[in-house]
Image 1 (tube, rainbow, N blue to C red):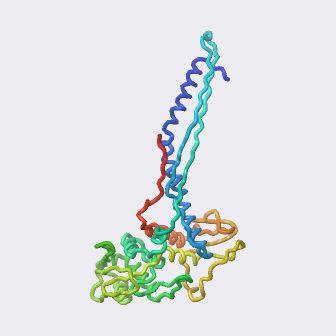
Image 2: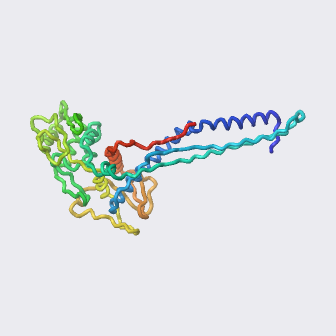
Image 3: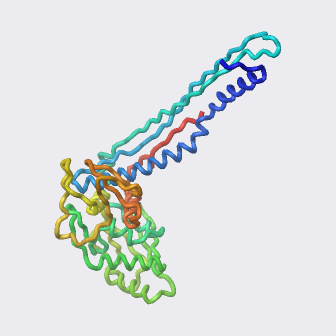
Length: 356
């Protein structure tokens, strides 16, 4: 034991007591750090899970989602202080010493909930609500991003698909309608507003802008013709989920389910035959001319700058970090998956950090 004079001993003992007292609020000190660390890891884990499901579906496997329903970060501390003191030493004696230690342990508990049963059917197999897509457009999301991914048809105009389960040859006017809507969004030539009147009754209101450019006028005239809308007005539409119009004032949208969207995205996976029993599904020759919506590369190793990467049956699959189009599509797929969860359950995982 080190020899201390009285002043040194008193200072060391006070420092030890302060060290123990400072640990009392460890939860408060860790709260901001834990929130950032767990948030970042949950975000990356969700990206990896979604990408893994897309890759697995390319090889004929069913999607499986494990949701993190709670994260509990529990801290414990163990402390000890030892004092060696000789009572009544002569003046100037240096007999005495102090020693101490603190051990802090973290024991996190993560709870996973599988997406199955009725919730699986509602979240993955039910078509997306058309009002949700138009509401996203109302808030600024481009039709060029949403419609090719999430829409099967608009007023009878069909979107093409490369997925053999839902293979469908698209109509030539569908991409032209999407492009016209996107241009009118950017120029504010046509502004959409969604109003909800009853439980499942929505109205889409289209407001024509002022001082329309020649391109705006051309796009509006094309939409009236291609979507079979009234030629004298296009300010109000009844939004319905249907394959075709039953009334001239209707905007009939047939949306895809998340299962269809994931299947469609899976067609863009670079999918060689794997050694461990992995043979990709054939997309079929009839729809090979349709460009994939997502590009997923594969190789023996994952690049360091990948946006998301997973290992499947001994091979790495990833989205390039510099592939802006694929990253944007992947982001929209994550948001649509959140919109599709209509179970009424918790919106996200519960993170519990003790602050005592």
